[in-house]
Amino acid sequence: MAIPRLPFVLLLGALLLSACATRSISDAGFPHTPGNRNALYRGELSDFDVVGRFAAASDAAAGVALPPRAHVLVVQSGALFPDEVMLAELGRHFEVAAASGVPLAEGYGERGMLAAAARGGFDAVVAYWGMLESQQDSDASAWVPVAGLFFSSTTQKMRLRLRVVVGDARTGQWRSLLTVPKSDERRTSLVGSEGSDRDQVELVKREGYGAAAEAVAALVRR
Image 1 (cartoon, rainbow, N blue to C red):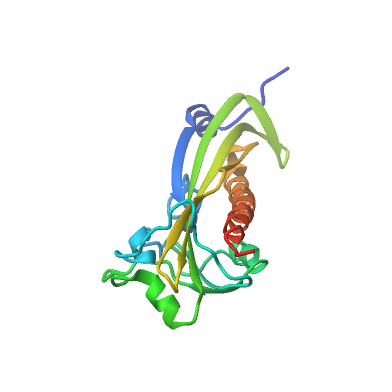
Image 2: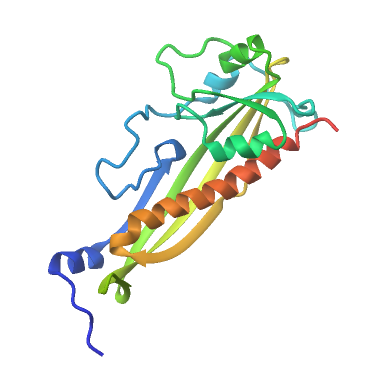
């Protein structure tokens, strides 16, 4: 069987493409396309930005206990506004409001965001950080038809790692939670990689955010 013909530039790119990328959930544009990132992204928050420099971390036995239907201030590190999916997942368990997670040059004071949350009548701050790890490999021996043409197949593996900090605005105590990383793998054409990447990001976020919200909900007093 004859091998489908490709323009030389596309074929060369397909043969050479094997890339790894790490990016924040707050700057999740396709990493292999120049200029496709979040122009408003200014980096990530530190834990101290959220809980302050003098907050006491709870031990494993005591933990942080939230009241049922607690009023929580949700913060996505690096983003002007938390992702809607996370707000929806947390909203199943809590009364939620949102705050910016863009780092401030002057910092957030000795008590961090917890101080502002306490003044606003919130029970807690739920802040989260997410890292997307992806690896993209092309297979010049496999071909995917697109609009009557054949393009080299590209496989991308993606994993989302999430960390959540829950700070009690009343006591200043806090807990750090880790969820099981969510992953996805799929094959697409070289020309369809960007759209496939976007779908993967949405999938692992949806699964990861659901697990994170359940982990926070487990801190509610029974």
